[in-house]
Length: 76
Image (tube, rainbow, N blue to C red; front, top):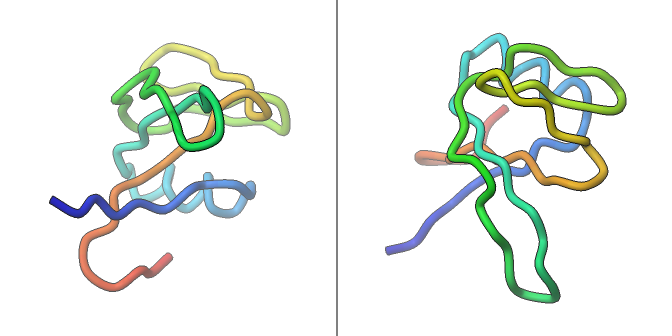
């Protein structure tokens, strides 16, 4: 099964995901090709230049990756 996702890096991407109430999941890199899904998440409640709040928990932006599933052609 192929899993397609988009990484949310910029403020505008996080803002768009928050407006769409997209389900965002949080991933932490464990090495070169290994990642750990920290939280299967929910919608973005709040974000700042330093952190993102998802489902009541805060995540530091430079320590985690924020992803949304993509169905069909990649649009945003």
